[in-house]
Image 1: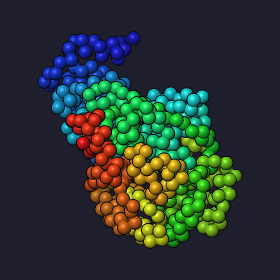
Image 2: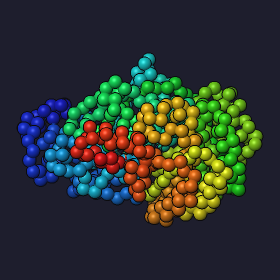
Image 3: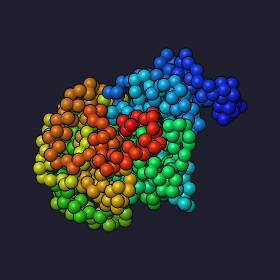
Length: 475
Ligand SMILES: Cc1cc2nc3c(=O)[nH]c(=O)nc-3n(C[C@H](O)[C@H](O)[C@H](O)COP(=O)(O)OP(=O)(O)OC[C@H]3O[C@@H](n4cnc5c(N)ncnc54)[C@H](O)[C@@H]3O)c2cc1C
């Protein structure tokens, strides 16, 4: 047996006396502060793998990637970076589309080793490491018939998704991810570990629920879990392109009166040349209505019946399925390493004109991997008062997320298309943007209304007065 991380840390600290020195490498600076995790520097084997995130179009060269093993390691990394005047970023699932978790010349503090998940089934409470992925969270909670509302692609990080808000299949019934968050353990800019909740550091807790990750490193999230599954009524209804407008309007008719158990995402995409799409739809543009019903299945079938009758799909794949299958159903649309660029709008309504603009704009999509997702908000999302968390967009009816993917080809043509499509649909937008969908052309200031922004800045001044956390750009 080798030494425990604590023993190594304390021996290193004793040896180094925690003094600030000029270091010949980033690794030396980290070790001198007691960092025990793996460190990958540019000359090391594996550096190219370590530096790349999910978006293959982001090609950055951090000074080093430091894999923290626990909160002490996170604190050691922050102190080392500050002592050596080295900027740093924090990375969990590496899904930031604009690449905010890796920066040229900065230290990347990677949290993937902090992925322990502890489910207290009796109390319906889940403690999740700051570097866990959504699929890991779903697998652990579903063993007990529980779930935490989260996002739609299983390899997204719980960290970034939660700190921005958390939109997904359960949201109209159980709210955003942050609405199930009860506490966080956070390493602050000075290296202190604190707990934030409704009762402790409540201003910090407010900011971390929707304000992004610029206030500290969350090493552990504590969520209230909900009873979900293991089988849910869900799946997709697929329509040929000539019926895309009809399908989107039919979805709107349903969602205008739908119970909160129903969440829907309307997607315009090019059907891949594979099952489950029939040969006549493969390679063609289609409209897909993604459905998740979170309640009694017979009642769900009854609610969906008018949609199926008024607008019969070419392919009906809605039926009982395991919740974990729903949560990874779309994974193949977003593999690691492709080029991506995205933009989104919140919407006060889904008008006929918007539907026309989306369908017309999608006619010109340059790449078969690109798609447009219009998701319906409301229900439990609106049950929380607008200012109660830093997520500033309660009350929006829906959002439309224009996701440019270029496969393994250059991203620029699809980037141009996303920008054009976004401009052409701007007149329908209600303002602001989801901080988790911030593209590289805009700043975090664009994400929030004045009132939320001013509160975020005040919390930032209190907990990170020197602005050392700058992944999203607050401070
Ligand atoms: C394929 C794909 C699907 C998506 N689907 C959804 C969806 O269904 N619903 C939804 O709401 N969003 C979705 N998103 C957006 C997603 O929520 C954001 O990209 C989010 O930032 C990803 O978090 P991450 O931990 O994977 O990313 P990272 O790139 O690791 O981090 C993103 C930001 O969060 C910060 N951060 C991450 N973890 C921590 C932590 N523990 N403490 C402090 N700061 C931290 C980072 O510093 C960085 O600034 C999706 C994104 C992608 C790429």
